Image 1 (tube, rainbow, N blue to C red):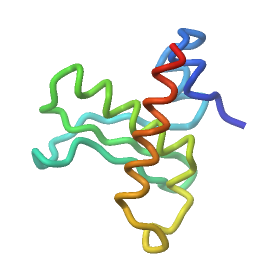
Image 2: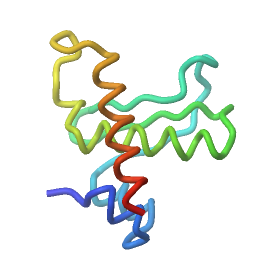
Image 3: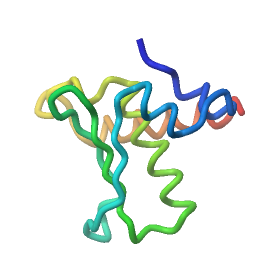
Length: 102
């Protein structure tokens, strides 16, 4: 069981608590300008890498987008079975839906 993103958005928990509870490591790294961030599963945890050159606002949105991938279980799907664009659109729609609930 994992803590849902809505709990974080409603200030029920902190981002650090969300990360720890869901076994996610968040790193700010150097990435190409066109890559905002990504998530992948490594062994028994998830790693989210965020482009460190983004503005603070863009970093926040990108982190939420990657959390959406986590909650939608995109990391457990084989990328070759799905079009990447569909996964990105689904994560964006989920993030927008949750932000509307705030």
